[in-house]
Length: 374
Image 1 (cartoon, rainbow, N blue to C red):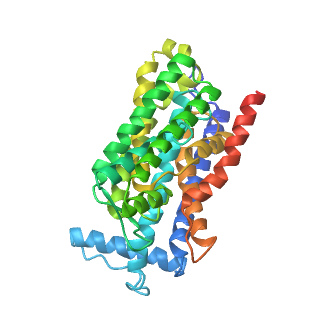
Image 2 (image 1 turned 90 degrees about the horizontal axis):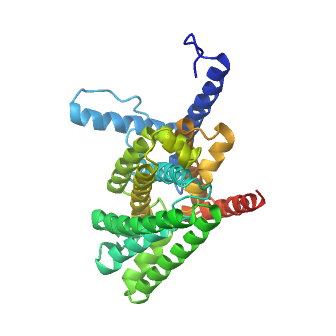
């Protein structure tokens, strides 16, 4: 926004600055929560020791590659906590952040692309479709095994085949959603009913596979469907991070197209936006993100629905700020839920999907009621 002389109104600068400050504040809160999440658990680690362990570990890894002889920040913690921090809690915390970002950015994109406030991978049945694809991979192709320990209860032997099958069924569900949206319109009621139908269909398919599975396969699939970030490994975190980062960049590049679509398809077409192409490609990218997260972590519901609406109430609908704000909120919310899940019934560890469902269900009902009242 500029005046005729090229200057920017001060009120607009203040408006934009508040949004930037909110996102920056969210990143600071995420950093503090990240350190806290690693420090709590069956073995408590002081937050300062966690920070030093992370910094010293990064120095060791950089020095191992570049051979610069960089000294440690402090030798007071030495390598006392290395095994717990680097091998167990850091991958779990990073998985929560990556999954939170991925689910949230997929949700905000779907809500804009379909012009539907109830759009998300979970409510539209895409997550359950990915779960069915992963179950096909685990049971029929033997890509998943059940281990004897809770920390590594389910191991995906071939993550690429598992992700590919999950992605295929996510695409199938996405195609059905797009077809229904084109034929019947993308009203909240139609999308909710379509999501219920798809979720029921793919859940029934998963149950059918479980009925004919042997004991170890059944245990693997049942435990795996409890969406949880605790099973993440460095390999799976890396693969998820690459896909989520690429998808987030794609959605950010298309932020102006989504702003135009929010104003209506005809308005967007008048502004030169190829609505059908943007919608189809965006849904495919959102399906890919959902497939990767579901295939490694199981079904984690409502994060993609709740976070965009929380951010909208704070910084508005402008996709320039809604997309990064939703990413930050998703990371904070899922990391906080995972931290609480490890503490609420300690020494037992709840799957994080349990808490997100408890949190998301009331919000979902509220959005439905608000939609019907309007």
